[in-house]
Amino acid sequence: MDRFVFLTVDGLSHGAIFAAFALALVLIWRGTRVVNFAQGTMAVAAAYIAYSVTKATGSYWLGAVAAIVAGLVFGVVVERVVMRYVAHTAPLSAIVVALGLSLVIEAIIGIIYGVNYLPFPAPFSRTSYVVGGVPLISPYDIFVFICVIVVMVGIGLLFARTAIGLRMRAAAFAPETARLVGVNVSRVLTFGWALSSGVGALAGLLILPTSGPGLVPSAMDLVFISAFTAAVIGGLDSPPGAVVGGLGLGLVLSYTSGYIGSNVTELAVLALLAVVLLVRPGGLFASRQGRRV
Amino acid sequence: MSLEVSGLTAGYDGEPVLHDIDLNIADGAIVAILGANGAGKTTLLRTLSGLIRPTAGRIVFNGAELTATSTRHRVSPRLRGRAGRAASVESRAHRGLAHVPEAGGVIAELTVDENLRLGGLWRKDRRDAAKAVAEVYGRFEPLAKRRSALGQQLSGGERQMLAIGRALVARPTMLLLDEPSLGLAPRITTQIMEMLRDLRDQQGLTVLLVEQNVRAALSIADEGIVIALGRVVARTSAADMLGDDAMRHAYLGF
Image (cartoon, rainbow over all chains, first blue to last red; front, side):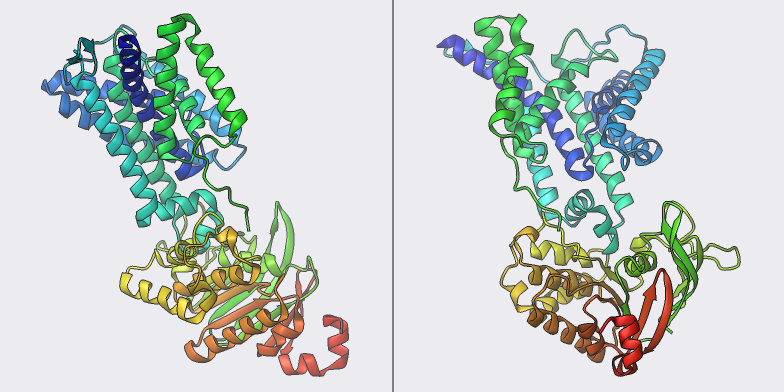
């Protein structure tokens, strides 16, 4: 029983991290109808900025703010310079271009910072509180959960309640019609990219202290794949879906690794993806499908 | 003069559909654009609203230059879109040109209320934008009853009302309508036509109405323009068009 509780909490903490990144993917999908395959690398680039700022100032929080601002800027730059010329062609073009962009960014980071692991410590303790003899949850885990909830609620409110959210939905569902009624679709798409890249940067900041030996250009590649799976499981349109998908994925990985063995975790992820898509092709939280009128 | 078009040539992928179109539409006129399928009526509206870039010709709307295919006439930088020198689609909407496309273009995934509010989001005067939405609900009772319904849940008539209502929220001076009666019951078509005429009478709205339902269009129009193979072939008053047997047979088919 202890083991189960431990695996559950461990799974949820890792899951929250996937959820954070999945939220960025849902944001870009809902805002622009494109999945940003360079999201992981852009987040890593932002994290490197955090590293430099923290090193220069000694403050984690200044570094974090710098990373998020960098994320916003990267989003604008990538959309303006690259994505706007390919997004309206075949969807595959956007994916291929984004993958290429990923390689370029990783290479540039490697040139500037080298390819050795750089230390990326967490701002709070990662030692778990022990409850009833079981190591349960650490201050850092709580911090991650809070961030994820805030971002999830923030995105939900943004889309449902704000004017810019309405513009983003209109621009994503029906860009031509949106333009006809006066929406500056071009500007809205840029905003969508900026915001999603900012959230991705935040997710990167949350993830990096927990993953592997430290910061390296390829640090987010595996996370991207898992987060993408989480987002698809939850339904790419749904912020709560991204969170449930992320947490679910974290749990599956934790139980698989704990009860079966760590060499089948990837298999478990793919099995989970297959099962969910067979039962509910639109993802667990698929929204009502609209017909074009 | 609301709209002046001269020498307009436009098409798709280099294939011209419209050839050398000249048009002058006065303020407060209701003009019916008639013609067979494929004649270029929809292309004309799409070129006016900026969805299609013309290869030649000039469009001047309420005194503002919208296209610049020659260097003599400049489009104001405030209107210009990101790519190219013509006024962007959204800036034309901001200037008062509202295009209701074929089948309405209601966004299926948004609710009635969201579709309507979308039409007024660009306006700086938020209070008037809200007032305009309320006016649309007052004018279209069926919409008022279904504010939270999704676009895809509406009937054909409701969708057309929503599309027109959404255009009206922007308080346009000119309405371009592409076959508003398509798929609608005759009674609803009559309602919509009467509503358009009322809008012109009450607010001085200029209406350019592309229609296959010739009788419905000419019942409210001042003038009819017939387009065939991308050119204007006839233009007279609605009364003459209905009254002249030869013209009616030749161009309108009855």
